[in-house]
Image (cartoon, rainbow, N blue to C red; front, top):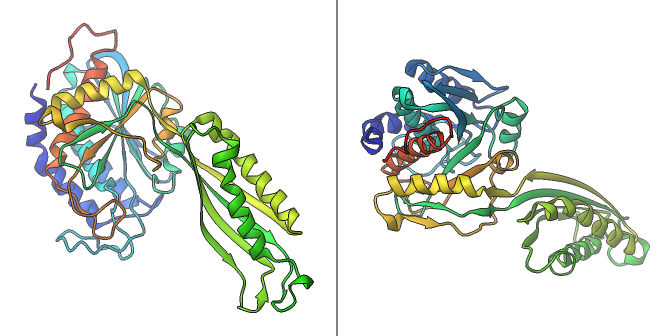
Length: 394
């Protein structure tokens, strides 16, 4: 089997499918057309599947030899961005765009599915194809898990295309590679009054400012300096008029961390600082805290499988690199907290970054992405212990 030749053969299929769903982006948990298109494609290939609620699906390819189970994941949702790329297949759904590349992940996994299904007689085990909804709101992976998507899975592998990197680059960092991401809302209750007589009220704006500053002490005084944490208040709304002391302030922010124990400890720390600082200024504070995603940790064995496959399918050894840690988050992390997993990045070229309304990538990268999905699945299954065949060379 020549994996790279097979990836070349399905290239047009992958491009056509990608462009179709790029034209019809759908928001998280509303990917109904996208799910239907994937289901239709799997029907045409001959791969059985089950639908998830409300969107997304899981296909299953069963090899002719008994073995372990590997899952391959692609996310399918789009962003609330109005596209300005000017490509012929630009979004037709006003206000929505595949500005993060999930359309490419979906198409590449379908291309890989065609190759894997056609060669299922060589599979020692089972492949689950997880077409996951709602990654952009960090709820899709949890929905997949809650609906049994990881049942029986021995390892899961994922891929994310990344703009402004060399086409065909494959990058992975072992261990903690993407941060846990939380969001919080703190509501501060004071008492409004005339700005010329502030002593007659309780200033929510001043209190909010104090809380913002005190939250920064988490990084330097509550968490070890070598344990990376970022606290950001990105939104603050307070007051109605220039000469009125504000009686209410609402702030929203995010906390990022790279240690799962630290992640667990952060909510009570943020709440304590907010409430006790508010009391110092005679206000009351209420907090809503959402632990959105876990730390994404690439398992050692899974990383070896992913990197071995990368070296076989990359155009040159220089294109297989170590990915530095990043404070960005990915809900693939939820899988890594439950089964051995690895998440790799695929260079997609392009001039504009992810989430830009001009975002586009070079479709030539699809050949490498498809080949990696196939090679990584084969490599894992042929290491399964129930199969005596050697790893297939790409």
